Amino acid sequence: MAHLDNGAQDLRSDALGGSDVGIGEGTVIVVEGPDGAGKTTFIELLKGYTNLEVAPRVVSKDAEAMVDLREWVHENVRAGWQELIFDRHRLISEPIYGPVLREEFEPGFSSLSWFYAMLEKFYACKPVIVYCLPPFDVVWKNVMSDDDNRIFHTNGRALRQIWSAYLNKACTDYALNKHIIIYDYTSDDPMFYVKRIQHFINNRRKQVVINVQ
Image 1 (cartoon, rainbow, N blue to C red):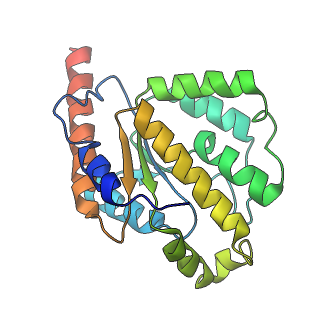
Image 2 (cartoon, one colour):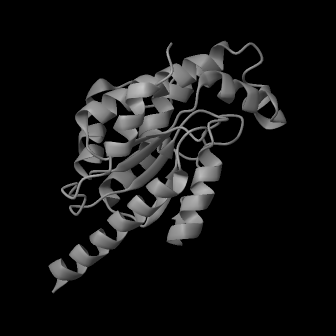
């Protein structure tokens, strides 16, 4: 699958560029992407600049759920705005990772009616979602140099399936929602997006104060 390149740079630059972005109704911040895509580094930058905490992990390194993921999704979707950074949100990542690494969905995620209802509520919160998606060969090289990840991607097919699924998801989300970033650490300036996200957080806090008054 072709990597987002010439035209995509404009998409990434414009994704959060307007003054009418309007995230004030409430949002969550989610950083998504396959292993080896620069997600952890971006989260560390975002955490350091915004002083936000990262939500606790709910899936182990070997892809085993540590909590009831269906209930976790319920609780987080109901919570709406949270001043947390999500290192993957299971509503997005479970349909991508679950069938590949576990060969099945977690209970509940195969129910179309439940999944659609949760997605509708999730996107109504106007989440800011950062999709970390450098070229596949970069992702593959990074995974091969990481002993923790290598066991999952010994032939590259699983990782390519995950990368391709994220690419399709990112493009679909960008077409349907305003608050999507497609970030390639090999060519993009991460601080451009980190500062934009901080700007949105500040605007949200101001609106909360106005609504309370």
